[in-house]
Amino acid sequence: QVRLVQSGGGLVQPGGSLKLSCAVSGVNFRLHPMRWHRQAPGKSRELVASISSGNNADYAESVRGRFTISRDNVWNRTYLQMNSLKPEDTATYYCSTTRQGVDFWGQGTQVTVSS
Image 1 (tube, rainbow, N blue to C red):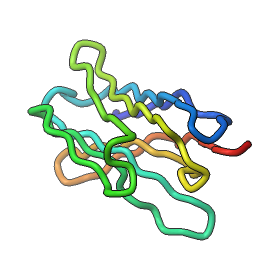
Image 2: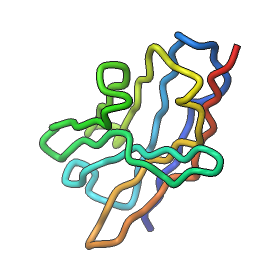
Image 3: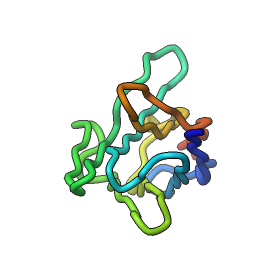
Image 4: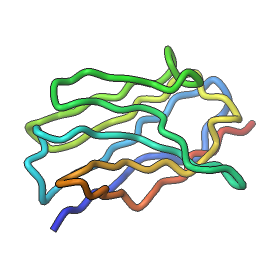
């Protein structure tokens, strides 16, 4: 059974930082790409960052230079370090991976950037 369990998130002031974590089980983690998405109220879900099994990272233009995706193939976790947060980063964030053509998702975690 594939499971993705997220932690982190919360309320932060503009300019602040947060780190999200996603613990993965049920797959050979090191072989799978990992992704972080977000969905703001009234908007469609968007891909924020991805990291390949070979540790190549890619970012949406809106977060490049502020967010960093990483993975730990020992503890089967992926992380999203978010710096210089802006109010427009407010959203529910989801991690995901794909196995045999099927996408699996974390439960989502709320990030609110507000003064």
